Image (tube, rainbow, N blue to C red; front, side, top):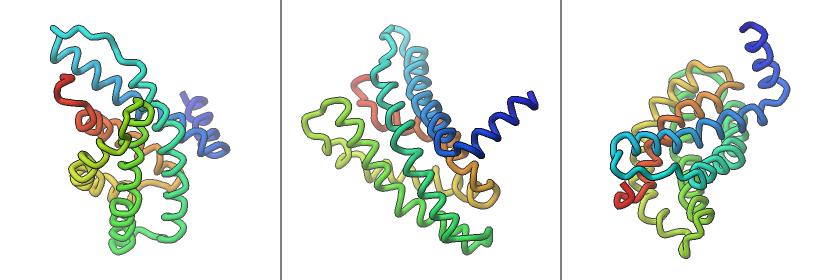
Amino acid sequence: MAGLVGRVKHIFGSRPLLANCVVYGTLYSGSEFIQQTLLRKVFPEQKSDYDFANIARYGVLGTFVFPNILFRWYKWLDKRFVGTSLSIIGQKMLLDQFVISPPILAIFYTGMSIMEGKPDIFTECREKLVPTFQSSCMFWMPAQAINFLILPNQFRVVYVATCSLLWVNILCILKRDTDQI
């Protein structure tokens, strides 16, 4: 076990972006897989197959898009706002929630619409961005307080990925059309 922990630390130390992309992508697409599994349990009469194309779409955003943005964002944020005072933590939380979250949510809805081949890639974003952002404030503000107060810089994206496992389940619910359930 110690050897595995040592390898993981080495990978995060030598290839942090790659490690973060793999972890984030796995957890991000895992959220959609969990959603589909839960729907099969709650509505067993539907007996639909897993939608692996949809899981793959979450995997694309979760592996190639969001961890790259977040990796650079947290590096900038941690360099610009150093410390763990309440003032610094508050500034980081507000910047994280009000500067980076809206574009990430917009990228989520438009990116998914592009991959789904929707004719108007902005419709879902227009309809769902504000309620999703409101939900994200309730979820991410406390989560980011823990992130910025306790965690070392190199584990920020992994922590966010872990929180995202829960958050993306919420996104999956918000994204999923109610008539699909």
